Length: 261
Image (cartoon, rainbow, N blue to C red):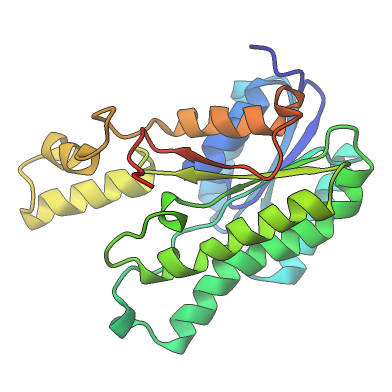
């Protein structure tokens, strides 16, 4: 399916790896110019080369910390200066500490809020005027299935990510009709982070090998597997495109059907 995004400009936060990178790559394959940010120079260089190989659009890779509003502002400014405007925004974020409620102190809570919620607030604040000037303005926020069904030992993600869903739902009304805003709720995908967790489980002796660890992650998913990151990226690209022009304020699970709610 041609999503009609050739020559459009997409900005993707925290997209030097994982689901953010998969989303940026899906947009690049559709012919969009793509700007990404991350905090690790080596990851940015690798991601930039991967995106250049994916499509015919230009690529901008910027070292920026999304928990610093000045960095977010500078990233948006660099993107607009480079490409002359902005059409699509995808917000992503790294993981926050895992653990139960009793192990989290105030610093953990405030850090998680900056990482998961305020990064989206700062990004949306900066991009709004540019998206409103576009004929195709869209925002897609990558959150988690934990916004609908909590996971054990992930109290920060369970509690804090829900703020993003409420924020984006509000923006879908306040920014309309010029800009559409939606969220995606990914379940387990075979990202470098999941691969690392499985390998750690093998080293600890919790599972015999990678295949058994993968099977543990897939347990309870009706499709009997975890996702390919590009499957999430394709959903993000569709929601960003004019093919989803009447989809606004949605929260789309991309989890193989694992949510029971």
